[in-house]
Every structure is written in structure tokens, then in C-alpha cells.
Amino acid sequence: MSVALYLVERHPDVNILRRYQSPAFKETDFLELVARERMTHSRMVPEMRNPCLLAAAFDETKYAAWRITGYRSAHGASDDRPLR
Image (cartoon, rainbow, N blue to C red):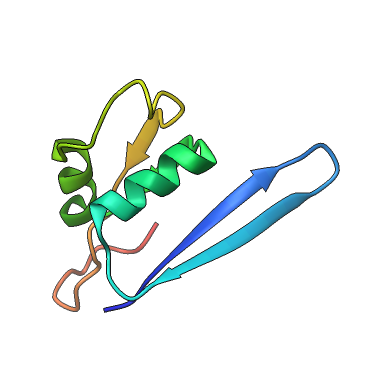
């Protein structure tokens, strides 16, 4: 399974969308990206978020900018709730 991450840089006159492609999700690679880009928000499924928060490499001082992480589960065919 391939993973694509989209980062938005907000500037006064323009927003820049950058795409990062990876053949598989690895929490160490993602945490490096979070620290390097000083990511502030993310939306991830629990299967991706939890290993990041429990990783040995997770040091709160390096990820101080990453303040909000939310999640949304996959919308299955048997789930009759509308997407929001």
C-alpha cells in the first residue's frame, strides 16, 4: 500500500501544497518529516497515529509544533452513516 502525505505551507499571499509519496508508512520516516517540516496538524487513522506516539524516537521537545492530530476511520460499505 502506498502512502501520500500532503503538506500545506501558508504564506500571506499564497498557500503551497507539497506532496510526499512513500511506498509504505513507517513511523520513523513520518516523525522525521514532522520534525523537519514543523508540522502542526495531522489527520491519520489510529493504525498510523498510535505507533508514532508510542515510538521510541518520539521526543516531545522535537515535535512541539505538532499540536493537533485527529483521525477518521475508513468508511466501510456496511457503514450507513453519511460522510461529513
